[in-house]
Image (cartoon, one colour):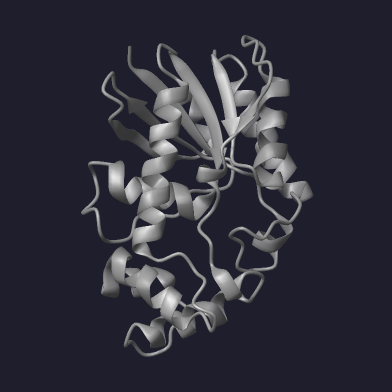
Length: 229
């Protein structure tokens, strides 16, 4: 039995609002983030889910509970947390200004400094972008391409095992992690270059088949467009 997976990006946080790097570092949802999530939750309130999950970061946990509380057709029970679905780890850059961070990453990748992360990824490719991020990190703690790919594989494998025989699940994760999943598992990508960053509260829909193979069929659907899924 195939399992339908709704991947939701958490709501806007204080670090999002302040343009700070936010990976494993956490910050609370903003008022705007909560209000945007109410739209997501309302548009998912009549969708039946057998189970709901989240990463183990508080912004994701708060998001999944808001969605679960608004759902009128599901009996969710205990919500399990999957650390493998955490955001990408940016090492020493956690909490730093995003624009200044990307300039350092661009320079480490052999480019002229630029805060345009799309330009950096399109120029370097996603693999070398991750390598440049780790290289630019003064302590070299940021996740490189291999570490992140291994964690994505672990996340999908754990979810596939957890959801055997289950029809539809929801899991709240994070923007860069969902985007990187999209680059790897969405057939409308080159599997190396950049794709649009998913909005807070957006839905990415995928399928886990009977063999545990995952593919994305709808990527980064805005919360207002959820009824069209």
